[in-house]
Image (cartoon, rainbow, N blue to C red):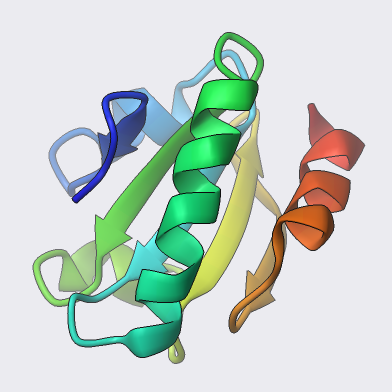
Length: 109
């Protein structure tokens, strides 16, 4: 379950919360049955807390939101994507440690 600083993105809030965000957005495309997704979840929570006010952090459950994951051709999970000014600027597929994700974020934050 996502922490209080980790948003849940859906088809309904995608345009406003991700594409319309004034700050960069880190999106974790995940599913409950995905082992590597569960491994990266605590890292996502830590980043949400550490980058609060600089980066919006949230998750998309690919099973519940197939339209959103399909729009970005998410084929494998976890897929971690960074959106800035409404554009997908970087993405990474598979488990990544915190150091790798911090490097990714720092390029865009």
